[in-house]
Length: 134
Image 1 (cartoon, rainbow, N blue to C red):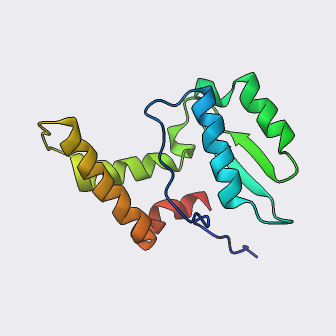
Image 2: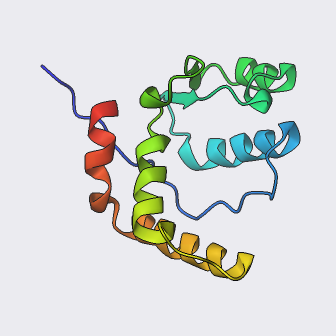
């Protein structure tokens, strides 16, 4: 029997990421996610790709210190078909940026904010992309 899983975490507010992800900004992101996702007596299963900041000693130290409530898994290298973000990026390109020219970074950013905001507000529109990963 397949168990029902909650597809979307209970994130109360949007996280504003730094312009560049590196070890310090990734640790800040993890701390943010910890405060938003932690529920007493429930474990979070966290899947990440092989970005260098995901594999740093500081990052793994953070995971060690928080192992009581978070369990981390790294995707194998060069396996985009296992990364749930890949179909979402394809959807984003198709619905927002495909065959479009943006005069400015602000125009591109505005389009991405619109597409991603629609996903956030209407998660059902992308749930089919997530079903192979649940």
